Image 1 (cartoon, rainbow over the protein chains, first blue to last red):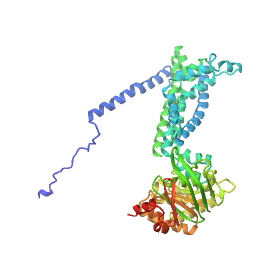
Image 2: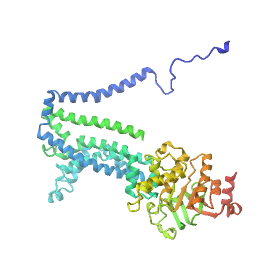
Image 3: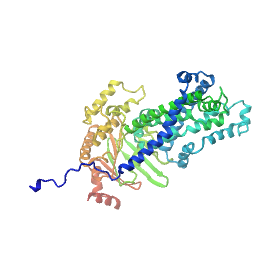
Image 4: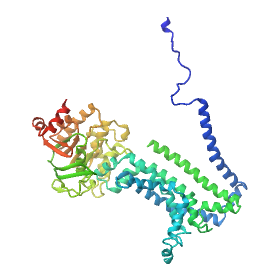
Length: 286
Length: 244
């Protein structure tokens, strides 16, 4: 009889893992994180759109009925259209080089790739002014040939390239290193040439990481303020990109147009976030 | 096809992986490169395939009398099978096998139907009929290695190089695949070199065994010759201690 009685009644509470925290600390930690995020990121986002639509849809649309604004948007698209493909190529080359070859100074090159992350963008801009500006190192020579880099599109593109160089390379290098190159070697022994190997074997392996890097690079190149601010000269209808134009509008107390244009950048950020999440999921699944 | 290796040396930094190696492999032979890890056997195989290059100015490699020392891997087209399969994970089994045919220059590339036919035939040969549309991740280790073998064979290589082909497989699968490879070699007579650190495997499969140690060839001979007349202490010791 006694043997039938279960001396270990099934426990009613869920098993607790050794690493899990008490309910109170979990609520506190998650609450703090969510609270901080809403205060720092969500609230400003809401304010941007609120201010942009202060005078309704028409007021919002009016902001874009302005030559200088449209020029700024056009210029930003142009800068991104030049910067992103170039940095995709540079990033691929750098990641390839770092992940596939062993050589002296490799560590130095790896930290050089990260340089844009720890150098202030203003300094990135200053470098180009010091190099190519009127009083700069190559300034007189460039003037002689009538080439204008500072306060013109080339300067903006150069400084944007500097600031956004890191993204593709930094995401791809560790990924390519982890994947190794056995598949590439197999492709070669099967008679694939360099291009076929890259196109049919390497690219499919890294495509989500590459896309992720391109998305981040694009977002940053459209949103960059500091570096571009130094080299652009803020010439309306000429060298003002979207972020610079927003500042100009704001300083002129044109709040609705300023926030309307800002909301376009914010929207870009949201789209980037969604795409980034999608590609991250794909990278995880691959 | 025969392979001639003359005075090949290879250093990685200050490490001498291969020291002045000479080796001849006759047409249709099945030869094992046997040695402990770090003996240079994989390096030698990779140099033959063109995945690694010997130190500049040291020796030469000939495929059937033709100097291929400076040819790249994709020009040499030696069938190579890797220890960890190195299958293209984003392609199906059939696409993997067809890869070598699809990357051929247009002039020599077989048309689509012929490629499909070749793939079906190879799948039958490795006893994986009906697996063509699966992905490598859905296969077991032994199946993966058979696919890797079929992929290497699809382009009709004149030499087959296997780098520890059964190294990652469990004992039972190993044995089956060994028998299968021996039988396959008997049928096709493709010149084959394979790397192993497993003496049993070398002795069971190979016509001749090459014993390597610290980048030097210690002895070359048939399994029987090696067993009966080990040339030096290392060979005797290495064969003995594995046999325990």
